[in-house]
Image 1 (tube, rainbow, N blue to C red):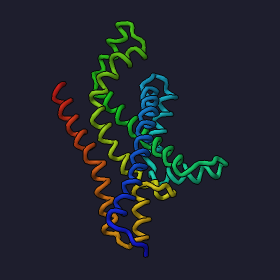
Image 2: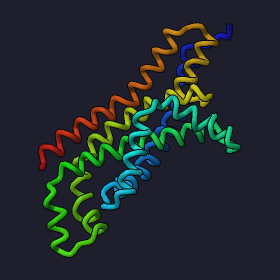
Image 3: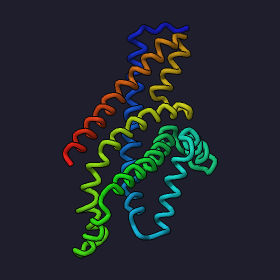
Image 4: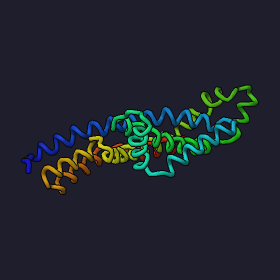
Length: 216
């Protein structure tokens, strides 16, 4: 058994946490980009686009993230596409995140008065102008708190990337446990680091919800 001091364990976990943060940011930024496009597609009056987006959302919401990671890593490899564990994890988490954000934002947009769309048409605004200047600015205030809140789920979801060999916080904890045989100490530190990453975001989401709801 290798000898690790408490500082050695903590230092290695903090180094691995950098990859958890980077993967979370990649998935969140990618999910926002894809989700915004899907939300705009769903708001159009074109039925095929609406059906496509609805199917996309139901597919990624209705299947486990773990299965999506497996398909991204092993499935693409079977198709002859060489992809790293990092690339597969980033791809799967981006698609997973975009599906949930699309549904969150759709719900937020649905809370806006329906008459605003008709009023914009009466003023001669096209779909893009209505979306850009009227709908999205209002929906942004409603969607900000749940969007920040969902980022907590993205961070926790990165733990599943360990199953395909990507060394992030959970995988590093497993490796250190195998080396030290001190599961309580190692995984308690892992849990504390996850808490330190997620709790401020939860507080920020609650603060935004109270602030924005109070200023409507």
